[in-house]
Image 1 (spheres, rainbow, N blue to C red):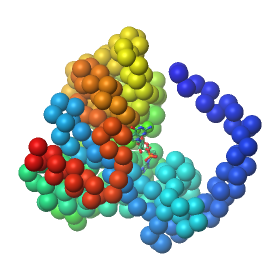
Image 2 (image 1 turned 90 degrees about the horizontal axis):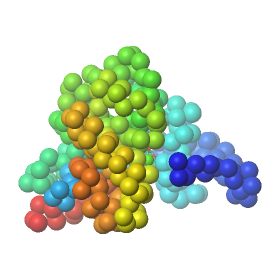
Image 3 (image 1 turned 180 degrees about the horizontal axis):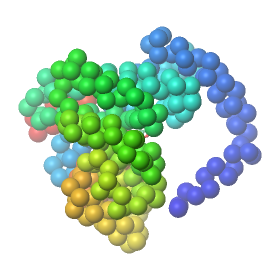
Image 4 (image 1 turned 90 degrees about the vertical axis):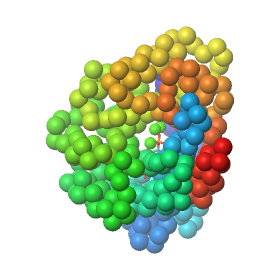
Length: 284
Ligand code: C2E
Ligand code: CA
Ligand code: CA
Ligand code: CA
């Protein structure tokens, strides 16, 4: 509610025309970008709020565009969804990420089982090859399904019927974790959670932002407290995103959140960075 009306100034924005032109350029370059090897993945650690240990990482895709430099996913994922490229691109991200997970598990067996979180777009959810592709990718890499967590946004699952949930159920039965991403932004019916094959709630960054002030808004505190206790009573783990300060981390830890992600711990970075963090973690 705090950032409502964020795009009200869109029309008066002098950069809007420039953005439209860029968007057109991106649309023509996107279909071949995968073949040209222009995408790469950054990994952002997921940290346990209780002991500070690194438990895994979220894979976040970037596009190294020959003219525009590094573009964030918000610039091209909507285009990729529109053009259908998201299916092969998503498969590529999954394959790379799963291999990365195997690498970490081999190199840092003593740091505990690392898990990799991969974002799924709604188009991938409805694509008939999802379960088969995922199984093959895991098998080819020799990675246990429990090393993988697929993140699906709350909005993609609002009002989801059984056909949409079936592939997610299959994956969950195999041991793949399903996380409900950006939770708290979609006004979904909380009672509906029981129906969904999810095991993790990822609390949206807007909640973390409301923990900025000290003391935090008592109503926000109550809301987060309520979500955490509901989640735990349904056996769901709670991850918070966008943690930028130690005060936020502490507040969210006290509220009972399990895992955190954000610039306070590390920005998204190359896989080598995660190797370093895992080493620090293992040696104390
Ligand atoms: P998301 O899944 O909500 O990912 C978290 C976003 O928050 C990432 O933005 C991350 O860089 C950013 N972030 C992390 N820590 C902080 C922090 O402390 N403060 C702030 N202000 N931001 C933080 P990014 O990398 O730009 O990704 C944006 C969105 O693009 C993601 O949001 C996700 O929905 C989508 N995305 C990224 N990679 C993929 C992918 O491989 N496939 C699909 N379908 N979507 C992807
Ligand atoms: Ca995510
Ligand atoms: Ca998120
Ligand atoms: Ca988000």
